[in-house]
Length: 575
Image 1 (cartoon, rainbow, N blue to C red):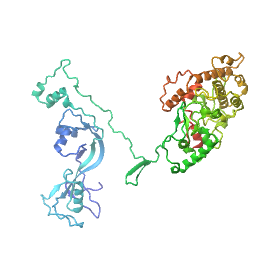
Image 2: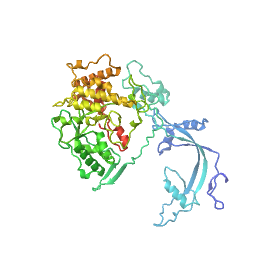
Image 3: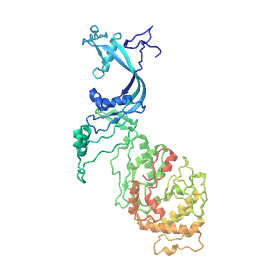
Image 4: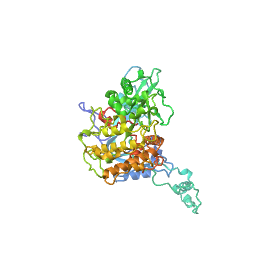
């Protein structure tokens, strides 16, 4: 204090309009913030260990001393809750106010309460347990001249119980612990002498535990979960007066009508009830109209093609528009393409041009720069700069054999414009009934040759080299169907290059695997992988040809990079 008055009990005195000053005595005071609501002082002292424990605690000189508060003071086996010492700069004040007479203040008046002349009987000491704080404050405001304040000492040390109490062991159900408590902990010589436990092996019940562990919980401080209300949650009253809470960022589910590949009939319209189109968001209605126009041009369309054909602003809503316009096969020649309601591509060979083939590109196949692959005969090097996505390019779904865009991993056959591949597809024999387990309206040999050559061309382009069509000349005369009877026609002369030998083995493996793995198994594999619950044994051996296995196990995320290129959240070709 800047100034002091005489020690002892003084009234608040001001000098020349200054605030009153009080003497701070040198008597040390230790504050213990009891964790319980104290209504019985004697019981509160017992919970702290009794007067002997308090006396020892108060006279201890250590700055790290602690005291324990038992939540069950009558149970000597109860584990105490330990305190934590905190240095403070508080003061302990004793405030004496006049005793209230019980008279009421006149209604509507702010005058102070009337009271009798102060005497020894009319003065009481404030006790927080018996007097509400608001009454004490009001009494001090009404009687500033009759209020006496005395500083009892400075509080330099405060003990707080802010840690989590440990779990307690209920010893009343344990016969051994109950005997220990009733005899040894009573500090009675007669009872201690009478304590005679049964130490024979097997004498204790199986449910008894001789003494609990020293601690049950290893966590002293409570964990701050940081709970807060979701800022996107909004409440409002509906017309009926009921309060409704909605999340503006909640995922709006969308429906994709998946039809089994061996289904006898295809849906003519949406098999699930959908909101009327006139009630939808304007962008969603625009997306439906654009996609409907695209389906009139080509009745079977992949997601990447649709993204390139419809308006970019409505592209995000394409995932919701599919349910209004068509269905999909999850496997087979038209995998993950939107098929117009009522159209069954399995009935007419003219729909073979909309079949699709896909590839999986792993990160290990691409160099650190993001473009480039490594094969035994190729060095991994950066690909051409043209591989970078161009948001204005609307031809990313096409493959011309010179450039490739990895914004998607699946191509429809009608979008393959490479002259060599186009010649193979246009001159190959066509089946009248599609083989859904192989290449649809194309035979397994044709699809295997197209897949192997196209994949090799993509790999060559990615490493920055132009594909050489002369390498693929030996495979142009291979049979359209490859099986045991035609396998001899796939033999190559000894003079072939290492790469040609590799491609020949790859084509044979593709043709064999395509014929052996039913499309229904591929369909199950696609659905299982979508739920990340694939059983490799169900999908046959991992030793099957790498390319077909990857197609079975992957959902060919067609629009992943296309989404980043457009920046509008479009979906991939496979959900």
